[in-house]
Length: 99
Image (cartoon, rainbow, N blue to C red; front, side, top):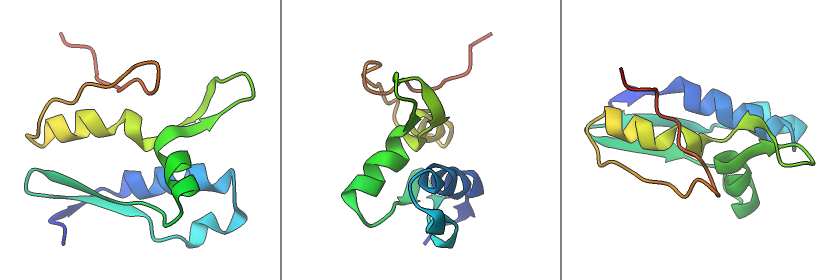
């Protein structure tokens, strides 16, 4: 289905999932690009999807491991997709500083 695999997405999803289940390394989570589309193969359970997209936070709410959603808007922009704005109170999208 994809033209180019994005292995970092799968690595990050498994890293996040390892905080919750020791069998996360067995998952087939992956992502890739097809044309101007980013395709992400998320886990099967809604709870696991929320964890994967949101990342891991400490008890006081500080980010321990970034979720995927922080990188998705910039990734879509890089492949020629639309500019995606996010609600920073929910998830701040990462974009490198412009020179």
